[in-house]
Length: 453
Ligand SMILES: [Fe+2]
Ligand SMILES: [Fe+2]
Image (cartoon, rainbow, N blue to C red; front, side, top):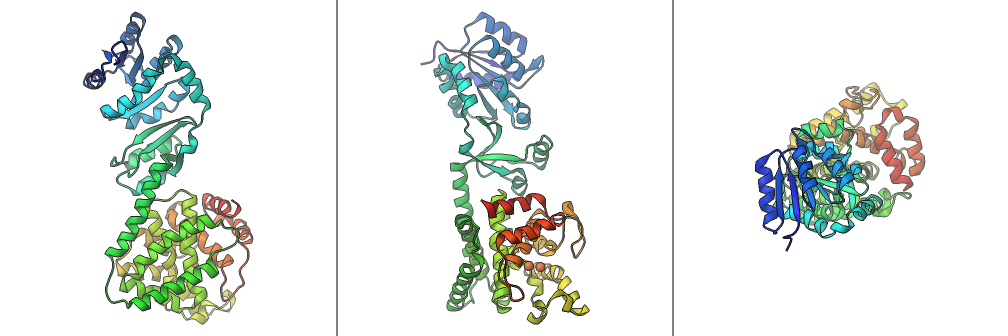
């Protein structure tokens, strides 16, 4: 079907060039393989070539330069093959007019998927370039912070690197591994976000929620009376609607964060030890309990805004949010509701120790991941070093604890407590911005977006 189309394959790796040749021949393309840039130019001037497929690095030149030369002299489509590790070097290539990219390793199917439509639109290639330059496909993708990939050993959905508004190149397939080194390399080159297609990511989100729900079932422990549990859950749900849902926060984001929270609550309330702990928080009074629920839900909401939405991250924030003040468990309610100036030395000490005490308590349970412990231990640390218990500075504080620190302060101000009437979310944000050296800049900005979106 493609008998009269000649494709030129340029790659110094002869095995790969031959493999590509076999893939293409199966579709009846004629294929010429060359192994350096200068021979490629000679072949182009001697034959009517329909398309050029080139590797990025060649002994006598660079694939990007070759493709630029092809674009200047011949109106034919071009495909650049790049190894995963070299993909960053192709970021400028989109501007140089490369028609498409393929990241190595690839299958025959993936190669043909790229090639066939280009060959068939051969006469309009020039139009294709200009059309692509104009037409943004950004709306098909969502940004994912690169730090998100540190938590994963394997990629669960296809990941893309944005080269321009109209060009996104796949850099990892499901099952592929991102190493710490690769992530650092991206960061060094100024890449802070990778991308996923909305539809592909949606499947992953559904998977995340199913996994959390499943985890809840697996951890199901006998011994909690169903009516006791149900009563508790109804009480919690009522409290959330009455105290946590604040004006100015968009209801869809809240609803989405609450979905994650419900799954977490399921995990916690299906385990005798963790359920008892949750009940203990509840016994400290509605305001105290509402604060913990608020920190959990708003931490998830803010993390989603920041695109920190891997399964592990959301689970850690949701659980860490609920238990962040668990170290106050044994502090009498009257101490908790006192003004700072009225506290005795002993009471002050007990309060200042709650992050350490809480981390110890949760560590003894051995039910939760390390990030939950870090949230509990570091939620009173401040970016400028003014926090406690260790006076850590920004980079020494776990990012999730930096997020909970912002949410904790916000909830203290915006959710009703026994000692103070609440202020509006906008006023609460202003209060936090006055002390902005204490908090992570980016997280504060995300909170602003949540309130003013
Ligand atoms: Fe606290
Ligand atoms: Fe708190």
